[in-house]
Length: 70
Image 1: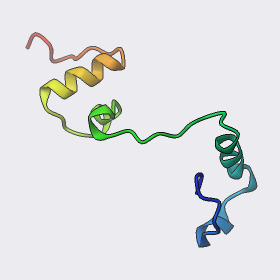
Image 2 (image 1 turned 135 degrees about the vertical axis):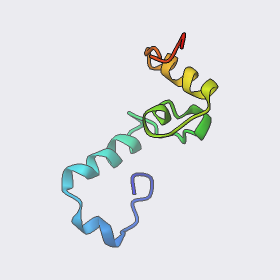
Image 3 (image 1 turned 90 degrees about the horizontal axis):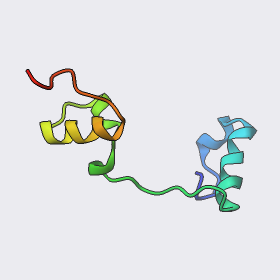
Image 4 (image 1 turned 90 degrees about the vertical axis):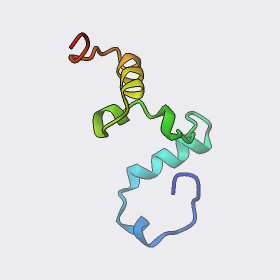
C-alpha cells in the first residue's frame, strides 16, 4: 500500500495518519528496500540459526553470545 496508492479493501480501516508514510515515501524522504534473508539481523531474535549466522547477527547487533567458550 505504501508504494501503490490504489484502493484496497483493507485500506478503509487504516487511520489517516498511516497514509503519512506514503507521503514520506513519495517525497523521497525515506526509501523502502527489500532485505533478503542473509541480511535479516533480527532473525537471531526469532529463529534458530546455524552457528555462523547466529554469531554474525549478534555481532551486528553489538551483542555477545553467552555460549562462547562453552
